[in-house]
Length: 581
Image 1 (cartoon, rainbow, N blue to C red):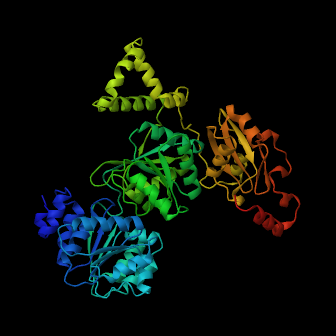
Image 2: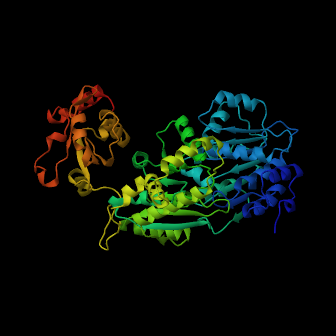
Image 3: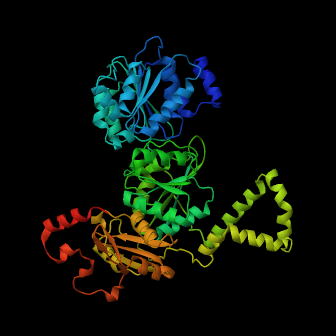
């Protein structure tokens, strides 16, 4: 068995490795480190995220640095701020027992003036995002003329994010005789093109098979009626009490809507997409890393470069169109030798897409049965019993209260006490699932189109509400900048904080529909029957059923400017007057 000691690693770095608790090198480390330490060959390493790539290049970088020269000798490029910070921390941990090594992270969203001041002090290793490094090069603050090693980490992700021109500009500014180490989960044409132009006779190291998904990930899927996707998502989350994962959606709107619905339904979830500020993004990620959030709902772009360990699940609420994107998604779980599960929610019209992805990752996808209400309640119950069995009871603070507690409960039998505790603890699950029918995909189910066509849009307008819910019309739509979360806020604000269960929300161009539990119909009508936003009367009423829709034009859903036929100019004036909602 290969050991770190057998790789000719310096004693100080070996001590840091020991302090970090690493016993034996991972496959990518055992392959890359000996070659990189010699510094004679360029290297292309194809390996999934979470396989130890940072140490594979970080150890040779540290060992080959000449600390007597206060100039930048190694450069690491990576796609995102989060990954930049994580790589820097990991290399700093490896350098704990290596004297006088200076490592600096430079990325967007932080003070460029502060980074310029740090660069003037002289840094041996710079870890950077391409955009910020280009800015610093333009200001003559980042000098790369002494760089002897360049690392491109997550090269495929950097190309997906549009950094090709920046990478080429950076590579053209470093010495031609530098060594290049390229790390990537997949090998698309763009990555191969960079390798061909900027690397000389590279040695290629592949951990697993090229473009293959992680060996530690189990790939599963559920065949789901398209309109039931959210219900199935809830059942999956409820059937996995210890879930800690990322739910991927295709668009920002869908991401925000799913996150809002999960949070509204009491799940420990939050959202990550491109509309968030850097401060909001940092706050969400900090809570997620601390496990204060169990489920992060994210777009692919927002999740790029995230480095979070121990994820149990990745859930594809919407399948990606590209197999390489799926590989990156699923690669966020099953890391560092641990097992992970990738789940996809698929309707029948998406099965061909699933089959293409299955061929791409060269892994079989297992068809799963949608959990029943009984199965979910059983899993939650026994998970809670497990926590009950292991709870720490050595709390002297409650000892003085126990006599009174015993006295108040003395008339309850053991069986009745257990029954009451279970009902109290599992009230939500019991209420949700005691009469819930199983969700099945009929043999003739066709699913829905991936992109809504006119027929589907018509069904959104006239479709009946889910059982137990009432469907409402509101004269705010996408043109007003309205989002599902804002409709929920509007309901909560005007019903004075009542916890009204909100169901499906359909955003149209000039108006929208939302569903609320039928027992609250009167509350919503009374509270929202006469409200004004930015001098505009807001219409909220029960949506008409399909048979009641007039054959002619429905002017109740139009803006006043449309009804008056004043043209595009007047519509723009009206829009400017009332502002974005």
